[in-house]
Amino acid sequence: MILVTKWFGVFLVDEKSNRIVDSRIMPKDASILAEKLAVMQRGGILDEEKELAAKGGEKMAVCDRRQSPLGKPELFDSSFITPSKYGFEDGFMHEVMMSLGKLRTSEPVPRDKNLVQAIRNLDDQIATINLYNERLHEWYGMHFPELADRARDARYADLVARFGHRDQVMEELGTDLPSIGADFDPDDMRAVQDLADTLCRLYDDKKETEAYIDDIVSKACPNMCALLSAPLAARMVSLAGGLERLSSLPSSTVQLLGAEKAMFRHLKSGKRPPKHGIIYQHPDVHRAPYWQRGKMARALAGKVLIAAKIDQNHGEFRGDVLAEEFARRAEDIRRRYPEAPKKPQKQKKGRSRDAGRNARGGRPHKKV
Image (cartoon, rainbow, N blue to C red; front, side, top):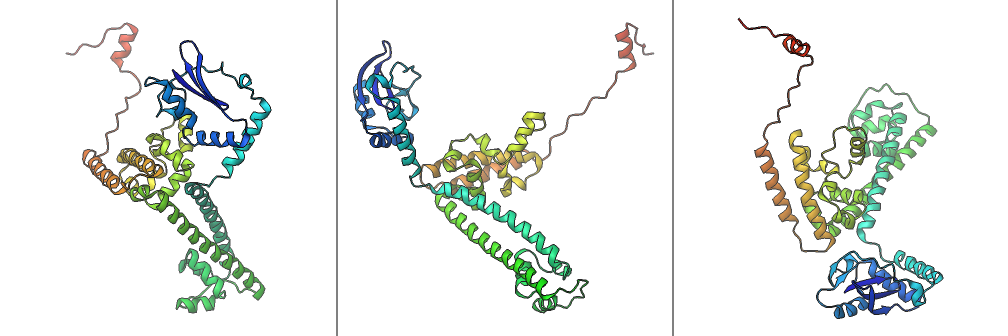
């Protein structure tokens, strides 16, 4: 016996004769049927499936991996079971699928999905800040270029926004510098200060976004945060497209997250493949010598994948154990590979004189 589930019903079929032994047909109500299909899409098992599975016996097989708690998944051609035989028309199927789409889009969004959007928002903020910062330095530098050596980033923008004129800025810094800058008219200085004020607000928004990301990732991915830092864990979840997808990837893909361009370049042109992606930001990876980094990244990716699976399935906290295991593995790599491997010697081009004579049929010189 094999259990077959279609969008319009659940069927218990004899594999040898393709005979339908028993069935449970879905109700012809679009909203109710959409709810049942939504349960199936989330990976749940329907009551109709459990009911028929009880009649199938211990050796019953199933067609869908989702139903693996009920039996062993197997391939089975169930195309002979068509909806028209049970009174389901194409127009009704369209109505059901529309109801299913509306139902799934209105479901609560997992926090890791918000994390993906927050990381991308942070990247946009960083790009905007860099653009505004460059413009402010170029503009205000015509008035007080020496300030760039005394203040940076948010501090630079704050000084310009609050004081403007170089004399007031130097008074705030407690210094007196001879400046080669030009004087600004009040209107010009006001425009520069408006730009600096905008940049200050962007820095404040960036801090709030970072705090929001840290809050989400510490709650959604506690094991990954214990193994990595919170920002790096958030980056990996964002690159994978969500915690659920990250937990389903192989460790080799986790190792190369963020190095997709280098990987495609390798596949296209045959250049050396990348050994790590964004996982390189982990201290034990980027501080390691070049000949150890690939092994470090591979070991860390395996632990990250275990941590992601635990976080996705809301298991108990094991981040400290995983971090300790990786630390031991990293120490083992340092001990076993203390020196760089020797590069193979390149063979010299050309042939010897004796080899050339032999190739032409001549006799080699005899040693006296």
